[in-house]
Image (cartoon, rainbow, N blue to C red; front, top):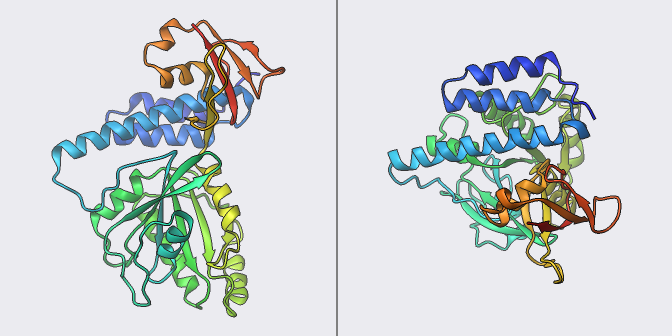
Amino acid sequence: MPANLTPQYYSAEDNYKRASTSEDKIKALQEMLAVIPKHKGTERLQGDIKKKIARLKEEGKKKKLSKSSFNPFGVEKQGAGQVVLAGYPNSGKSSIVGIMTRAKVKIADYPFSTALPVSGMMPYKDTFIQLVDTPPLAVDNIPPGLIGTFKEADALLIVIDVSTAECLEQMEGLMHVLQDREIIDISEDGFIIAPLPFLIVANKVDHPEAADNLGVLAELWPDLEMLQISNNGTGLEELRQRLYQILEIIRVYGKASGRPVDLERPFILKKGSTVVDFAEQVHRDFPNKLKSALVWGSSKFDGQAVPREYVLEDGDIVELQL
């Protein structure tokens, strides 16, 4: 299938080629990813762009660590992806992380009970996603280190407390701060442009005032997806699914010739990854030796031989042919 790339894509690609700093390169790559046509013919190209962004971010992170002292807000990434929570005081961030990961978070009735990030691992399917609770945002006083925590995340979960009429203030304040600090960006139509994927959750929907407050938010922000959840379990399974989806990752299972497949420890790759990308994860020397692969799952029939450039999908089983 032809890629049918647009003039907007080629313009962003030209900006990437001209960029002299890592920050400018990342920005141009994110724009390329935002405007590229989303279809089968561009899946591999999308995967290449995402890998370049990830590599540049990782290089930048290593440079910062070598130049700077200890950052108390820094959180080492673990699992299939890192999702950082952002919200006002008492919005329920800590409760969400505690319920979904069983991490030992501090939950209190008074504001600013979370002073430093706390992370936990959320099980989903046969992998784990890292959720990070953060100190609540005070619009007029945000530690620089916390901004870095948001920017280094793989995705952001914006938590709005709809049990209070102040939910509109929370929404406007968070969206303003996060866009002003170039953590997220959305178009006039409410589409996520760059640089960080995010999901908004309306928390505490079991409160008597929640329905009216949700109506106000929906009227003023009609184009933004807003997942409804509460600590009684409402929406939590859907939240797990959506967090997995916005990370844009796939699980691929390795199979050695003549042996059963290992279905307990999948390899985690970005959407659009190929057989070669999988081989590189298995062993850094494998891409040079790789001839083809046998695939169960997305292939036309089980055990189909596919070329090195074959784009894998979530749940595929792969046997490398070296």
